[in-house]
Each structure stands twice: as C-alpha cells, then as structure tokens.
Image (cartoon, rainbow, N blue to C red; front, side):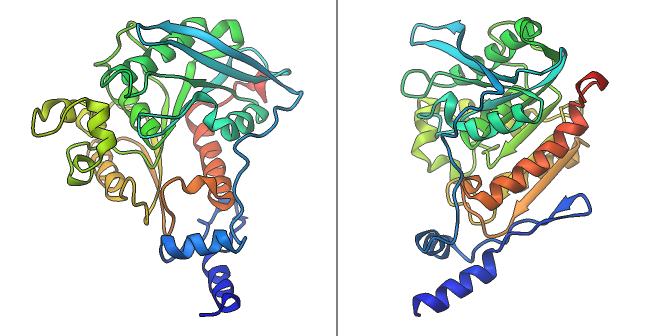
Length: 317
C-alpha cells in the first residue's frame, strides 16, 4: 500500500470531532496499534506537550513535604491562579508508571489546564515498587490527601470538595483511596467527592494482571505464593453503594491494561448503584491521552464531571 493511500485511510479513521450541543463526540480511533504508529510516523497525530511552560498567572507551591519514610521524603506540588478565591475545589493528580517509575510532574498538562480554569490542583509523589511494595503507595497517597485536608485552607482550598485523578497505575491508586479506608496509615480521611479513572486496572487477580511483571514487583511476590495481597490490592473488591461518583476513560485497543478491566469496573459500580460515567473509546491504546484529540476529549468530560461533583461556590464564578 503506498503512503498516500495509507495517509488517506488514516485520516478517514482518525479525524477529530467538535463539541455539539454541549457534548463532544469521541475522536475516531484506529484499527490497531500498527495503524496508529503509522499515523504518528506520518505526522497525522499531534501529541500534547508534556512539559508546558507555567504561565505567569499560575502560582506554584513546589515540593511541600507531606510525609517522611525510611526510603524517601514524599512531597507534593500545588497549582493555583493568582486570582483564585477562597474555598476553591481541589483536584489531586496521581501519576502512573507501572507503580515503578514516574514523577509528580508527569501530569503538568492537566495540572495547569485545570488551574487556569479556576480550580486548585495538586500532584503527589509516592514510594515506587523498587523501594517499597504494596500497600506503601496506597498509604502514601492517602497521607497526601490527609495532609491536603488538614492544611488545604492555608492555600485557599475548600477541603470538602476534593476529587482524585489517576492514570494507569495512578488510577489504580486513586481507586484504592476512593473505595476503601483500609490503608489510612496517617489517620482517617473524609471521603473524596469523585474519582477519575484513566485506563487503570481494578482487578489484580485476572490472568492479564498475573502475567504482568510490574504487578509482581508492586506486590512483592508471585500470586502462587500468596493470592491474598493481590485480592487486597484490587479496588473492585471494595466497591459499595456509598462510594464516590466515578468517571472512567479507556481505549479498546489497550494492550497494557485491557479494556476488560474497565468493563468489570463498570459492571460492579452499576450493581452497587454507584454513579459512573464510562467512556469506552474505540480504537485507542494505553496512554491514549498523549494524543491531542483524546486529551481534549478527556479534559472536556473531566470538566463536566467536576462541575457535577465539586461545583464552584458562587464567589468563585
């Protein structure tokens, strides 16, 4: 197939859609990951800037220590507009990276976008699996949320309006924090108001999960040695009717965290009558929000979700 014909076919299956009547159609995906790679190689898929410059209008409180552990000091960053009013809702972002790499600055593209929209945003570090195994990372994120609850008013945060967002392994940690209070090593944390799950695994006992070496490193043992930690580390096992509203984004050609993980989550949340929006994006892979079309789509529906679960006070509008 010549490159011109291939380019035309890719354009037909990947064009972006514009919002209509307050909604946005999903960006058209790809037949498979090979076609997607061709599209990127031909310059037909723009990627987001993962290191955007911080505008003068945004104040950053950098590297705030929230927990000391034997392995490392854990720090968080806070982003807010200079003109942010008191009692502003908070959005916490948890980075991914297979539980073994990544840093709190990885979601700068979201942190700055929603800070510019008037929210206060924060990102947390946590112990990675190469230095501490489960439940260390879950405990760390809970401690970060606890610190923000206790100290948020000093930064203009409405501590009664907090949503947590994560991608991949970060989404797994966000769901653990949102669905269970079992790992609150820094004290009890009031329930958060919403969870944004971006292609995160929810059941760590499936065949997919058990064949993933990163999971074995995260847990610190093989499933055959002891299945209990894998069950304890599965967010789906904690879901109950009083859990916070959740919104999920997942691509159907994800070969890292299969779409079946979010299908299971959707079923479980429905069975427990938990409010859940599920955006099943046809023809998109893992880390799909690195692409501009998907990133715009996610930010559009995340904003609508935030408006529902952590609405601004009148003074913030």
